[in-house]
Amino acid sequence: MRRKETENHYQLRVCGVLSGPIHGQIGPIGASRPHVFAASRAVRLFDYKAAFQTAVEQVKSEGRYRVFADLKRVRGQFPKAIRRRADGTEQDVIVWCSNDYLGMGQHPAVLAAMQAEIDEVGAGAGGTRNISGTTRSAVDLEAELAAWHRKEAALLFTSGYVANEATLTTLQRILPGLIVFSDSLNHASMIAGIRNGGCERHIFAHNDLEHLEALLRDAPAGAPKLVAFESVYSMDGDIADLAGTIALARKYGAMTYLDEVHAVGLYGPTGAGVAERDGLLDGVDIVECTLGKAIGVMGGYIAADAMIVDAVRSWASGFIFTTSLPPALTAGALASVRWLKAHPELREAHQERAATLKARFAAAGIPVLPSQSHIVPVHVGDPVHCKMISDLLLEEHGVYVQPINYPTVPKGTERLRFTPSPNHTDAMMDDLVRAMDRLWTHCNVARLPLAA
Ligand code: PLP
Image (cartoon, rainbow, N blue to C red; front, top):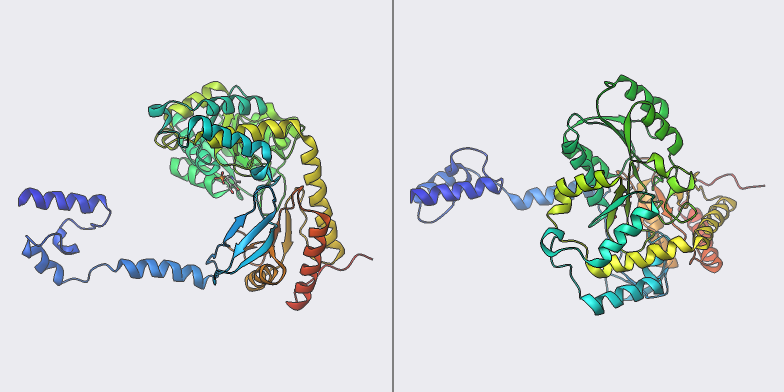
């Protein structure tokens, strides 16, 4: 009896349920101990259902509740998809907001590589790399990625989020006393990694090099430091001043950590990212990317000096204790990267499509926000209008673009975010601009002064 009580007490503590030392306070543990029941009847039990409901209600009351579009992509026909409505009926739609920026998720070379890998080696990786060894296509992919970014080594993770979170946490274990300088608009996965490590951290105003320098200047000269930033910021489509940031990091003895998630495959002569475009590959100490956007598959990675990669490989829980990517994904990503390296015309077509859509929106008075990249954000400035326009575009015009509301962007800057790909035709753009023009009038949303 005594032993059993202790076990139950322990189980509840592990579940995070027990707040006080007397488990009689928190409710029935077993029918064999009536005293516990007696004590528990005197207190109100925790209402778990209400807590979960409150969490959802809060999101709803803030206008942040998300409803996902039920879409089936059509093989080989990107950006076409079939939407299933709540009543089960179907509708053909054009996807205008995918981060499969170049349609590589539907590319014949990628699909063939994935199918061949399944035929040859099967479905799963079989466990962590420590337990199951490394899938050969993962080794080949890491070599290809390292060479792409002109680094000695690369390391795969199960997603870009995990790559950021695991690496940034681990760097703080490897470098005690590390001070991190993080751009204020960095992605949630970078913030999570920086916070998890518990180090001293300073947030610099977005892409504000004067602010960054002031913070770097104040830090002890001999302390290890890391400047963490992105190249393309995905909500505004602006591009960081890589040269300026790297120069500051060098001046103050800081390492650089660059997230090229929204740039890899898309910028630079071979698609290695903005660092390649700007001739700065050597100025980046650790680059982090995804395999899930322009590369069209799934997964994430870092590339860096072999010693850095070996240390992260040896210490990062988020790498060590999780099943590695299935072989079909690594084979597909490998085929995609090889294709992207050899096909700069895809990147040119991508930029042309983005520039054309920006110009067409501007000509129609649709308030397209200034963006230096392939991302085409359109200002709405109100969460209700933003959601309404998105819903009407989908239901009445077969255009899928999701509303971007707070907290993804600041209140008052709600927007629609378009990501035209080389596969979006002129005819698709005609339909889109016509639909947006009508809805802008219908919903009475402010326009830009029309070009003379
Ligand atoms: N970094 C940035 C800047 C992102 O926008 C994202 C995802 O949207 C990630 C990292 C995470 O990448 P993944 O989708 O591969 O987890």
